[in-house]
Every structure is written in structure tokens, then in C-alpha cells.
Length: 250
Image (cartoon, rainbow, N blue to C red; front, side):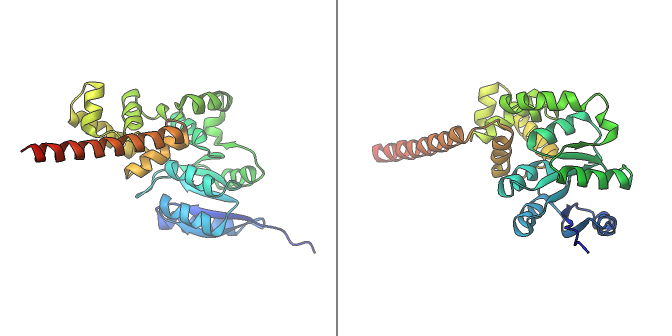
């Protein structure tokens, strides 16, 4: 009898009851098995590195670090791993952003079990899967515009407003809230509001998260990030030097 190689699945969701239900459903299939569970995006990235799953079943909205942010990190460390998002968000904007970030599939939590199992098998074969509720008339549009979205750095802007996207880019480049406020002619409080909005929408907690996300979706190039770091460092050193000179003069 030929031994069947099972699809290795990592499940990431912040609800323990849902994770348990998904494990029961997946483990009951003859061709797949759950090799681990994660309760947030950060843990999902770490476990994906350790266990090398073929498919990561990832929730979009989780504490600490959300699924959209985790996609790029998982793929960067495990290029062969396919990320399948499991979410309650039926808005086309989330689908566009997920595919732009590198997701192989998108399934709604309200879908029937058969759809989820089909999605796992489909993405494991190297294909794309979109929930039937969103697929009609949308999939071709998303796939057709995905490459352009990556080149222009605009895939994530379907969820973010133009101003939120602008502030995210400037934060990633290393500008402070005061500097951003001066650049876009708004108050510091308004900048902080925009920062809070995009952080909540994308599950970004730290500036490092913002930088990594901007790199993942093409808003920031590695070269520009390096230049920004050098420029900020130089500016900081210049400021210290100036303060020192002033002190000497006194």
C-alpha cells in the first residue's frame, strides 16, 4: 500500500476554539494534517520557520501582529510555503491587499467546510484560491491589476486612504510625526490619528513592523530604507555637534 504524503498545515488564529475546530476538520482528512497552532502573526512567523509547513492557514485580524503583516515575513523565510487567509472580511479591498502582499488564497470564515478544504488543496498545488462569494467578476480584475499594484506600491491603498498611505510611507522612511506634519501641512495630532488608523487596519505595532510592511508591498525600497537610515543618523550626529558647539560658545 502506497503511503500518502499529507499536506502539512499550520493554523494561526487568536481564537482557541476556532483553532481546535479547524484542527479536527483538517486532521480528519486523509491527505492533510495540522502540524502546529499559532495565536498571533508573530508566533505564526516563528512557527513557520521551525516547522516548514506547506500551507499556513492565517487569520487576518489578530493581536500583536495581524495576518496581513505576517504574510511577507512567512514567505520571505519560507518561499515554498503557501499562505491561505481565513477571514471574516468580505470586502474586495482586503482581498486585493492580501494578494498584493503575497497570499495564495482567501477564504471567508462563514464558508462551508468543503470550501476550506478545497482551498487548502488548491493552494498547495501552486494555484490561487478565492472564496466563491468574492470570485465572481472580481478575481480576474484583482489578478490583472496585482502586478501594477506591486510596482506602484498601491495594493495596500485599497484599504488605506490616500492620506493614511502617505503617512505610512513617511513613517517607514524614518520621519517623526512633527516632520510629517510639516511636510503635509497638518497638525501633529492629525498625523498621530492617521498613524493609529493604518496601524489598526494592518495590525502594525512598531515602526519596524511599518518598515517591513512598506518593503513587502513596494512602498519602500531596501535602497531607500538604507539611505533614510544613513540620512537620519547623519542628521542626528549633526544636531549633536551643533548642540556641542553652542555649549562651547556659552
